[in-house]
Image (cartoon, rainbow, N blue to C red; front, side):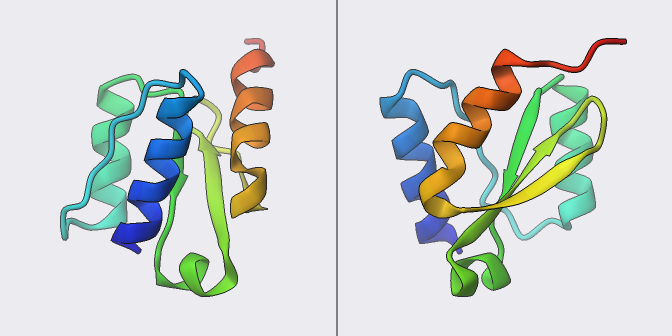
Length: 88
């Protein structure tokens, strides 16, 4: 999962999207809470299941919605979510 996460981070960075990532052994909930405190708009979740399925979960932190996308579609999903933030 780490190798896939680093590959996704590099791809996003090459496309001018700022990236911060956690490779810690902390729980997913703890990592999402940390991202929320930092006011991160999106989280991309890649675990063992996602590596096996060649997918990733793109989670909109402010509304808690998430979608599973193929790894090839991550950039498109991120750009779509960043360009169309939810209205409050």
